[in-house]
Length: 618
Image 1 (cartoon, rainbow, N blue to C red):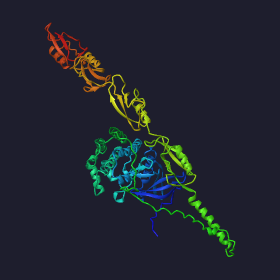
Image 2 (image 1 turned 120 degrees about the vertical axis):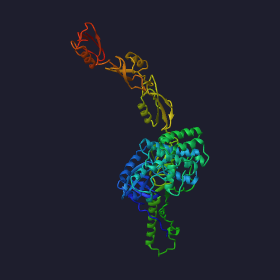
Image 3 (image 1 turned 180 degrees about the vertical axis):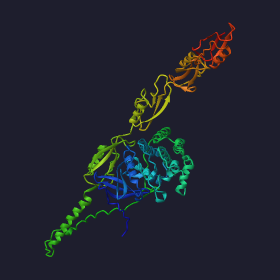
Image 4 (image 1 turned 90 degrees about the vertical axis):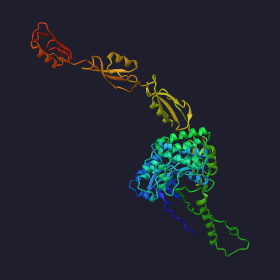
């Protein structure tokens, strides 16, 4: 008798709905099972997080939030999240079951991919990351183990949000969990623990490096030594190990810069660069390479093959002698009870066959067929076909089947409906008319049709600031989702240099400003040093201003007016002292040659500019 490893979750019913049928794989954070959603009769994948994570007080709350965020992602290149929950303290996710293998399996078997194959894998990965980045979600753990290659030619990215949920816990390397596979960690994750869209760009660049070369850029005896190299060394170009086109070399190096600011800003920007390089090289999309063997386990995921339950034994044929009629010569000794037992045995055998294998069949492969062909083939197999979701595909023609549930070769009850996902064809959007509208309206229009605005500005004397002057590609052009559309937006008239006006006469200052398109704001004040109507100061004094902007000028009203002291009848010397103390100059005219002041001008008590001359007659 051979002993088998029993998994306590196999056979369990989670939350009264999800039946766990068999274990598929076990990794550093979770174990994946094949299961059945008994409410919808749908085959699913159930990812159960390891018990150690449930010990953290806030893990379940963060896990729930991240699962909800991942479930909102709308992309045919993201593994769909259907539900989340907990069972006996174990957090779990219910996800789409993808029939195929991981990119790690393919790389382990083939070593490396051709440039065309590598770009055909990376493009849908970046489409998935673009959808996540637009939704404000960062994957944080992009690696070959999380890239699933479907048998139908699809490429899907799994485990969105799980790395962020685990970050909230205190799990460490010594407890078996590494937040982001060390071979794909960005320098900022190692040095500060921070992660944003550019972190995913770095990991996607390393993904491209490994697909082109068959190796990761850094190796070391410990995880710490590998992480150290990410922080302190530049990722080498792929051409340092294999022969690749220079454009692919440059693309990989740009995506894996140590400085996040030197990388493409997000997955959408990386995707646009990838498509430009692919077009420049004349490469076309190719089929995803198939694994010819049983697949290799990923570096951080161990595939566990569980023994299947033996098929129920079919009753053997009944010997002809047992069914033959009695011969002419009577056998008086055959008891009636023996015939009864034989009949009951036949009934039991037939009933067992029907309850066991008789009412089941094998799901045919329907992917790649037209909808009509798939419905007809399902009917031939004793099944029905229900057309469900529709999704875009770069590979499967419009109207043909992208995926099916249950998968091909699955054991299924006769009469069951096979759910089909059909293709909408290649996802393309027409660029809208954007010229003549505001920048904000243009950006909103682009986002509404899954396109990315890329804004540049230019001065214009004729078009109001903030209005779109031109666009590229032109309106009506059919492009892929996430394609950048360049908007040239008016910055209004070009600014002009501010002239220096201090000391100028008011009329001259006003004319100089008008000649260059600037206006004037004026305030007046007294000045003992600047003549009346002369410019005392200006604001701003230097720099550049948009046309139509006002320059503030402070203009002199001349010296302040003060009261002239009354010195009539005073001795001349004393009168001079009084007037000079009040800020006036004095001019003495000898007419009568008296020692006292006979008259003064201006008269005492009147107001005159400070510093002006008072005339005394004696």
